View 1 (cartoon, rainbow, N blue to C red):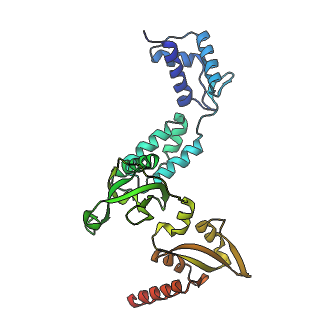
View 2 (cartoon, rainbow, N blue to C red; view 1 turned 45 degrees about the vertical axis):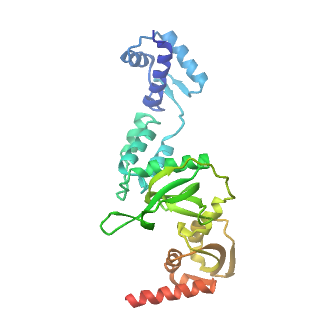
View 3 (cartoon, helix red, strand yellow; view 1 turned 60 degrees about the vertical axis):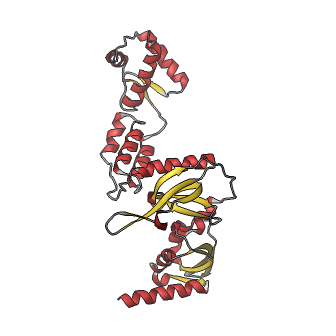
Amino acid sequence: MMNTTKLRLLYLIDLFKQDTNETNSVTMPDIQDYLYSKGIVAERKSLYEDIDTLKTWGLDIIYNRPQGYYLASTDFDIIEIKLLVDAIASSDFLTKKKTSELQKKLLNCINHYDQESIKHQLFQNPNKFKNENIFYSLDTIQNAINKNSSIQFMYFDITIDKQKKYRKNSTPYHLIPYALLYENQRYYCIGYSTKYNNFSHYRVDKMDQVILQDDFNEKKNFNLPKYKTTNFNMTLGQIENITLEFDLSLTNIVFDTFGQDVFIKKVSPSTFTINLSSTVSTNFIGWLLQFGKKVKVISPSSLIEDIKHLIDEVQEVY
């Protein structure tokens, strides 16, 4: 025979979490009617005891005379769910289907009234990827990280015909994953290659046929914050010690890009310099050039020459 007492408690948890908040309470008759709709008849005395049990368990149930009972606090409040739902909506790598599934799960963490408030503001990034395998690739990579195992995968580019073209003539890549990093609206898999004896990273949305290998690898020393800092915008390249001079008006942009721990030295009333170690790439040079005369490379000289060369190439086009 089914234990209706335990079942009654579960239904009460759902009722308080889904149908109450500070402005929407339920009376004792409301509770009895709700349980009756679930096929359970309950007396007031037993319901008072149930509510006391739930409060002892940790539910923040408040009685507000004469409106009734409501759940005053939950694991997530509306603004926390709003932040998570919007973050998921803006993530390119999640497909429209997976985005909707995750948003629905998050919304179920709050009551119906707050759900409706958020649903009216839902927006989906139109640039969503169409590859449903990304989510499963992430799961496999995380599993490999947990087990210190390696993975095998194919890596591809998209052709002008919007078709996959695998790199290295469709030869599989092998990598020991160390971290999954979310950057630039995408996930990157950072790992160690035993073939090349170094760390590198790959965009998960361009990884295909990710397979977990049945092996175990001793971990090498790896510093994720340092790796992220030295690989500007997750682009590969030669790491250089760089000194840049910025106009004072770019202070906040420098902080937003390199963090507030970056060492800054004021050199004039209107300029300051920073020193950093970073990869030198076309991506990095392009970032510098967008600020025009407000940024100047002090060193290394090789970077200065690379910038001049790129400017000359652009002038030839125009």
